[in-house]
Image (cartoon, rainbow, N blue to C red; front, top):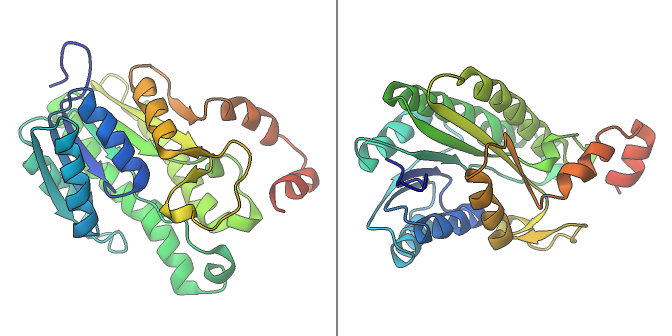
Length: 255
């Protein structure tokens, strides 16, 4: 159960070895989360993240392996994570994602399909199972890592942005479906973040680091905001960008 300050105690993190997820995990543990279950595809990275969680204050950690290219693995991964967490899960974080390589992937049917599976299909399957379990227990929160790329899809990243747009819109509806159940869902829309996935890419305006994103997320978890923007100024930037005429949008965003 959440403690007296409303801070989650038992946490399941799907995609727990990602740079952003690890930064969030450390801040959650510093804020008294004591059980952290990390799920992902790379055991070595998951073990590193688990050790970090213990260093930052967790008393129990465990890991679950899954393949996000195999949608049939989603239900079992969530079930295993919940079982390892114990009787009650306070927070489920969905941080599964793949940036990909647009120029290559857009001409490769298998690569394009892989992008959709990892960024949309697997997360939807896993979120469905997590939703069922949290509703059954009558409480809990879901935090889904979306992206500003979901707000308006750029031609130079339409596979990633399109998949994130699908996830983003679905989660808005899922959040509304949870009204009255004791369960809530928040979206996180970060801009460009310095991570392993973005190494070698030119920085764009408002680029931040993983620690800045994590700090924004922790603050957002204590609010009733449906969407957590990181950095927060992007909420206002995209109020303008999303309404630009298409020729101007392409000129500004697809250079």
